[in-house]
Length: 222
Image (cartoon, rainbow, N blue to C red):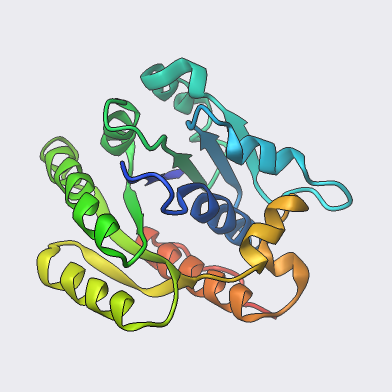
């Protein structure tokens, strides 16, 4: 077994990178995969989320390697034989080399983007980084994940703008603005721990689409 590596990044802050990382990691874990999260954000949000779990352990392993900066990549050699999936949660920093190093080692890049114009404008920088990384890592796949979606004309307009300008695939699944997502941080869990809901359905759809891109077949949802 050699782990598939997912990098979740976007140089734009506040686009739900860590939320995407933890919800996806936990959902994949609950559906049969062995998952490890590398927290590369200096704020250690993913690691703190993991340690909030009480009665029920978080369904993936999480460790902060942020102090190592780009040197974290050397630690992956000891992990790829132990897990099915490794997810790297990158810092939101234009000057950081962490996303670049992570992309060179990854099978899949997921770029969360909120369909508002500042996110759409900033997404071009992430896309350019992917294009450069593909020159050295031709097998790298990259997709956009629409995040924190709400209804409204502005969201529709921004989404159409992204569709017209991007050369990357936009996942069919998406994540809406729902209270269950921040609430799950408080309890150190994922949304499915609260039972069946629209938020759970959304994360299962994201997990299914992500798994298909990596060649995994997940356990069916009850």
